[in-house]
Length: 449
Image (cartoon, rainbow, N blue to C red; front, side, top):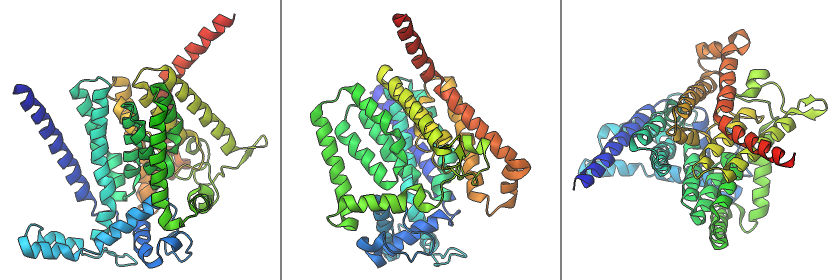
């Protein structure tokens, strides 16, 4: 009985923390209704005007043509459909008074200076999937930490580090980006893989990629983990069949029967960085390229000894991934998480044409391994500080002069300091990976000698 009460108390405690995290995000969601969230609002609204078959091929866009895969477009369209039924709020209020009239008034209030006179309720609904995803990822981190064998108190610390991270709070509730929704399915796929359930892990990863393909950088480590698990061929086949079913189901409304041709076209013309303009060494990311080159100016194709900058660093990131794959194959059960953190953060730090938010595929892994040692805990804390500074500058640099000048004055001194911190944190995080691989190489060399 005592054990039952302890378990119940733990769930009540976690539930109250989740409510606090949710409440904080809902409160902050009233701000930041500009920029990317306006783009998402246009996509959701115009989907119903154009229809799925013409959605990706129309050229009459106020903000931007669609640059996200079909699943995102369907989500935005579904949100607008729900928003159009907002009159139900008043009907429920009149019937049972359960919804406060103040909320109904707020929900229907027009956002000041919005070119389409969009109401606050639509923006709130657009932010809701990422806000809910933050809560779900926090709980997944807690469960993951327990599976790694850490005690419940350390698991709760990791849970809190993600739930109340200024990075996740700001990105989901103020900025309104959907990176948390992408991360939910990507991180869930690793959780399912950790349990040996590749049949569901593969379609979960497919959903993540069909919302936004930023988690593609984690695929080498993901499949290395699957090899280490020695999963049966039948499970692979089931997982691949379910992934194919997800892909076809989501794409057919847009493509008709030509799923392959449509997918190839929108990847080349809508999603890849080249479709959005010339690739830069760094667009707005605090990474190695922001430390060395002029941010948002130096082209990724800039030649050094006849070879493009992007090629050098693509090769370097491939080496990082090779190391992470080897570490996953040789390591203990939990070390796939460190490998994913090293590989995904390495892509953000060293690949060209990175945006400020592309660290997100590394963040859940960095936070969950923070429960293993003080070293990883402080890496997670300082990564949150660097990432948050990056988001604040990227979001406010065009609208708040003091923020832009703080980072950009004196030849971007503050920006470069944060960029250096990000590079150092990656090396510190990846030290155990390279130490083990170098040790293995020394052993092999001694055997040959």
